[in-house]
Each structure stands twice: as structure tokens, then as C-alpha cells.
Length: 151
Image (cartoon, rainbow, N blue to C red; front, side, top):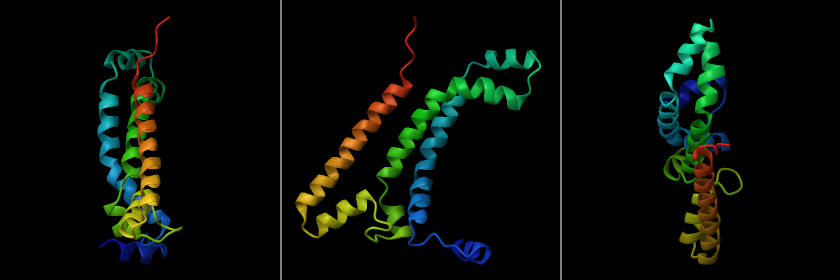
């Protein structure tokens, strides 16, 4: 629907390109990032921001020097979870970028293609790689959201 206008303005189309695959996966992961970012920013104690304002700092400086650093661990966890969601994206990627091996094929699409072709060993190997990546992502999320140890 918007592709025609994008192409007329820029001469670029996301269809059947790796950029389109990234765009599709990113759009599908965006709700997780927005929800995580909102929760992270709302979890910051407003008293710290009030102290910053009372010291004459503006909203933008307070955001970058107080709010963002205090929310950074939760924001990073949101980034990791969004990445994991994007990594497993299948439908939107297939619709926007297609399944061109070596160009737009993602891991879930490669697993599906190998399975449909009867190449069970390859599908299993790819699924194991994706599973280990997911486990590492969960571990990283837990490490990032763990409160720092006090001295």
C-alpha cells in the first residue's frame, strides 16, 4: 500500500531485499520493545528526576543523565527480547522479503524449507542452532535484569 509512494520518493523498495527482511522483523518486534521501554521508564523513581529539576537541569538533560541510566538495564533487556522475537519472525519476513537463499532467507525460513524438502538432518541442525541462540538470549535477559550486587 505504501510501497508505491516510497518507491516514487526514494527509488527504493523493501520487497525482496535483506533490508525488507530486517524491516519486517523489526516491525513485528516493535511492540515488545515499546512495552519494555515503557515499563523501564515508568520504573524510575520520580524523586531522582525531581532532584535533577531542583538543581536547575532541564527535561532533556534529566532524561539523558538521570532517567535513561537508571532504566538502562531494563531497556537492554527489552532490546534483547525484541531481538529474540525478530530472530524467530517467519510470516512477515516471508511476505515482505520472500525466501531467497543467500539474500533474504532467515533461519526460520531455512528450517521450513529444509523440512519441506525432506532434509530432516539440516532442519534439525538449524533448529538446534536457533534453540541455542534462544537459550543464550534468555540467559542474557536474566543477566541484564538481575539487580546489581551490593557491596
